[in-house]
Image (cartoon, rainbow, N blue to C red; front, side, top):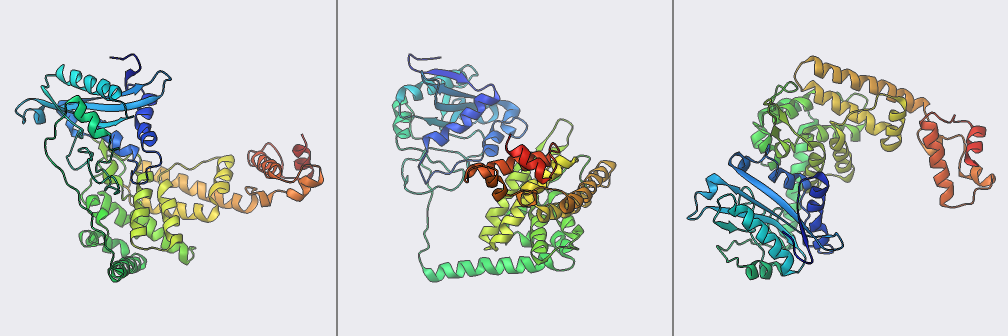
Length: 448
């Protein structure tokens, strides 16, 4: 289904999905009130393994291109037979609509959605709605464009109203969101004081002896201070790796932390990172055909969520950055070869990597007692041993090179960015083992 100006394409490849996901960034570029949804949240809607609506339903997505090949519109259509039967007419939906201000683009997508739904027995089309719960991605904003919405609440350009109404959509019900601005400076002071007090109390709990047992016993009470805890309680992890639910696993990991050799900041960063390392697992959970739970993307999603939590609690900046950095990679594989370890030392530094190993040990010690877990722990130990050796003897920073910027300028390399670029090239060659860290060899390589 195409027009003289535009072409409709069904999203059937990862590349097309990427374009479908990225279009809103173009539509809302420069709009400070729009909040970009996380790709993982949107993908979850269209993943049969994570969206129960697919049990008796289908979904399809399209993009629209102009003659230059640029994506100028996107939409999704979907239905669930059980929900459709609740209406007087069998009703499907369309949503996740984005378009340039051109009725022809909108009509092309609405026609495609309507005809696709009709071919599956639907007699009416509701939109824009979500293929799931009404609390998310539901409705069209028609007033209040000057305010930033809550995450997953609708936000769109004003011209969308005309695009929908010109096609024939009618208002079915009004949905209201409210904003309350607290302008009283004394009230703000009280709010900040409460946040700081919560941080202080939680910090004291995490650093105290028996912190793991306390967390395990009082999770529901602690969720009053950190609401994100509540979904972790009872979030099961079936499979060969785990023996606890997410919350009990996190508590056991805090209890297993070995903080010997860590400085004061390192202790605090590790306690908080371990406490929050799996906080996003309930948001990323899926179950495979074998019944095992999977948590794809929970590292990165957990880092984002941990940053929100720590900032809300007014935690110090070093703690926010340190804990978030560890959470983002806590489940990532570690290199076993010297080149990989040196490059990791170059990117992250020895202090960070020692903290990462401590977190990984605690995490693994809170897993099931299986050969697979034991093998992973052995891999971490081997990495840590070699990393500590290379941190003392290896060359992984520019200042460890046998030459410096002055040496390069002495042999004729002009002052400026070229000096730094040459040093970086020499460092890469040294780390990769193709060049010895010796002055004469480095200078010879620099002039080639």
